[in-house]
Image 1 (cartoon, helix red, strand yellow):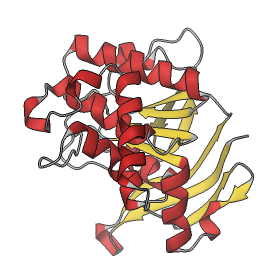
Image 2: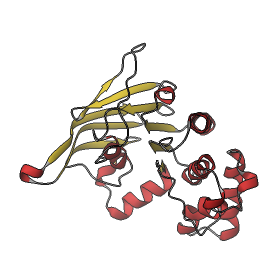
Image 3: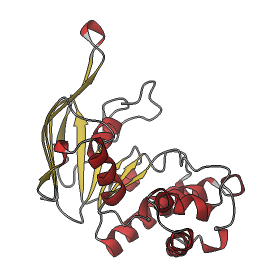
Length: 240
């Protein structure tokens, strides 16, 4: 298994205000698999992705990545793990408005200490791969919503990750741009051998994944082949 999580427990608050989000969750994924995580708003999809990226830690349970217990990593080790192994695409592109598309994509390499010319060359290459070469000098406000998300995907791929996490990546896009973004994610997965974990309310996109996992009552249940996918509602009041 490329990813193996067992018994993940995570909640927020204390006492009567505590909310139990993950309740002994198990997850396994092979290298190159594309998994969809579906469920009602606020059920814990974002929490799960944050745990997989080591942006947060579970209260109990285990998480093995390529056979290594990554929960043993200290903060510096977790930061290095994210930079070298994980690409993350959010619903909101989170691009820096004062920088061009190329500069935004190159930013992870610059933070890692790569020379400017090398980082720029890598960024231009990834943007070209995603059909954004002609927009590389434009700032986010000069790009459409779909183009901004494609830049965000390029930024997620710049460090050559082995796992891509996507949290409602098409939530702010229309149907046409949602389909186009999913085409790019699928193509990137095929070219790079990425393991992809996608949280989405978009039923059409979910059906293109290898497996669909429903997060409900704090645990994951696999959707049976041929079973209708009901992905749940969007726009949560509180997003976990």
